[in-house]
Image (cartoon, rainbow, N blue to C red; front, side):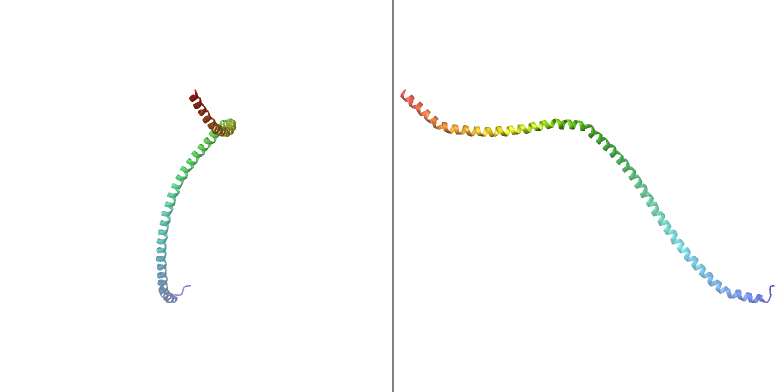
Length: 155
C-alpha cells in the first residue's frame, strides 16, 4: 500500500532531483548542439566527398573514352602490322630470286674488277716500255734527220 505521508517526501525528492535533471538537460542540450555541429561538418564532408566522387567518375569516363580510342588504334595498328607481314611474306620469294641471281652478278663484277686491275697494270707496263722506246728512238731520230739533211745537200 501506498502511504499518504510519504507524498511530501516524494515531492521533496522530486524537487531535489529537478536541479539535477536541469543540469542533465543542459548537458543533453550541449551534447545535442555538439552532435548537430558534428553532423553539419559530416554533411559538409559528405558533400565534398560527393563532389570529388563526381570528379573521379568524370575522369574515369574520360579515361574510358581515351582507352577505347587507344584500343581502336591498337587494333588498327595490329591489322596494318598483319598486312605488312603478309606483304613481306609475299615478296620473300621474289627477294630470294633476286638474291640468287645477284650472286653470279656480284661474282662477275668481282672478276671484272680483277681483270680491270690486271689490264691497268699491263697498260702501265706497256706505257713504260713505250716511254723507253721513245727515249731510245730519239737519238736515232736525230741521226736519221741529219742523214737526210746530208743526203739532200749531197744530192
